[in-house]
Length: 168
Length: 152
Image (cartoon, rainbow over the protein chains, first blue to last red):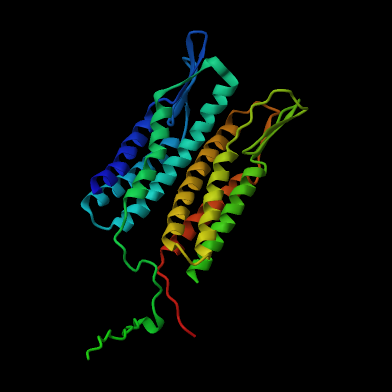
């Protein structure tokens, strides 16, 4: 189970890094490429200066958090911490994927056949969804995680009444 | 007490995210028309028939929903670890979408490339979103502080 959980963190980390650089959308006019969109930049018509973007930075930050969560999970130590770190990374990747998928949807609706969905879209979609499996599979051992500290910091030991068997 | 503060911070962050998605992000005035944008809509005065809408507010609505759920679960005094996970997830989504909107805002405000007579003005949306992200991160910090309860 630990291996599956580790893979569920590490695989989306790799996919998010790939998705940060692989184009997710291409617009064509006729048979010619007009613009090529990636999380790093939008390449306009040949000769124009590309428009740079920030999305790749967030994707890389999310990928680093997912990778740390994967490493901790595979080591089998600090599973609770791994799950918290991985969840933060998953949120970053999901948020960026939502922003870029909205962009794709807009262009597909607006430009219709001129918009071509590229591999980056699928990489980001999977990278956004897969960490949910990591959250579900990484189960820290049951510890008194949120048990409130007792008054004065001293735990109260509850002594149970012993069960006496009645002997005749 | 940390539970209350974290819940309150997540709720306020959710409110700021929704407000930030609705208020003006920027307006762009030319001698002939004015373009006003929020993360949901773009309006041109005088009106035109077909205008692309940004829809970025959808991501903010998702983030705000997650933060509101995290706050509600945390206030219910049960399932604290679940609340923490949902809150951290929502905070990540909110930060990422805020960066996405910031990227779009940067493209909408090309002050260094505007022709004479064209004016771009920023609205309050970016401030709302940055404040929401900062508050959500602070709430994550509060939710990670171990609970201590003193009896009367």
